[in-house]
Length: 330
Figure 1 (cartoon, rainbow, N blue to C red):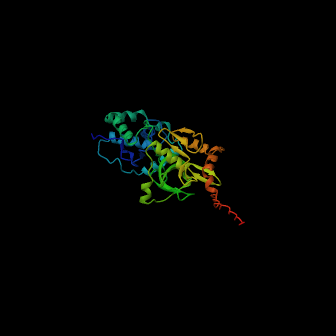
Figure 2 (cartoon, one colour):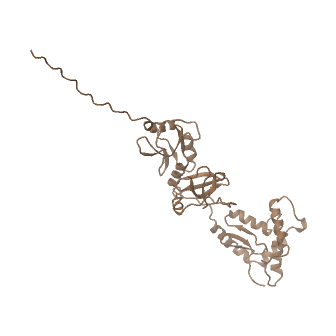
Figure 3 (cartoon, rainbow, N blue to C red):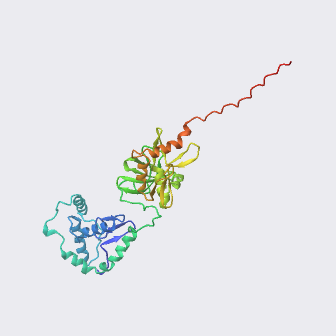
């Protein structure tokens, strides 16, 4: 009918097939290369065993050859069957659902290219739209905190969710990154940053005041300090001491301090240092004996706490001078 159409349309949060009746969608959070490969498989550009490919190509033939206005988004009688078969084929790609003569041929792709030449010229524009929606991993300033990792979470455990430690209800905060499928980075209401397993967190609701305090640090220096404060626990005298503790003289002290260029042990006599990166937390846990058998750091902590456990010595009363003997009169 002379109108210009696209096979796929990019929305604010997803990419949508404009031809298929089931309006198949793909999230924009998916990696751009993976997303483009999925679109190529869906339209038959690359080899695929998905039954929805045949539906897509049939819809494309109807749009190119019919010449009459028709609703491409209407549901056919077999749209639900095709959608169900497509899901089954995606779960078991090894099963070949069609014969060789039914596979998409070059004829469909040639017809699509001839009927929609504008698609070739707009490919760069569409790719630019996808890249704008999901920025590529470009080098970050070394002074900035690591960029949060987001994933397509299939549960509530996603970035922005309110959560608390299932074993310690005092640890409450917001999920600010997803380092892996089994762990979550949580910025707590006290300003620390902890890494917890997905099995160790439960869903909760924070107050507005708690949300205002659970802010992920933006600089590398503050981020590493927050990680250290939330992770370090040194066993000493039968109890665990966090990175920040109270010394014997009543002053607040830290076992490890972060500067602009490195991390330094603040209690060991030789004051060892480590490079400033997120992985240094693992080395600090070994140094303080949290995950290793080293005792030098523990002894330094004991010395800092020792006089607190000892009673203060009592001062002896001042001695009175000896009495002067009286002289006898002659």
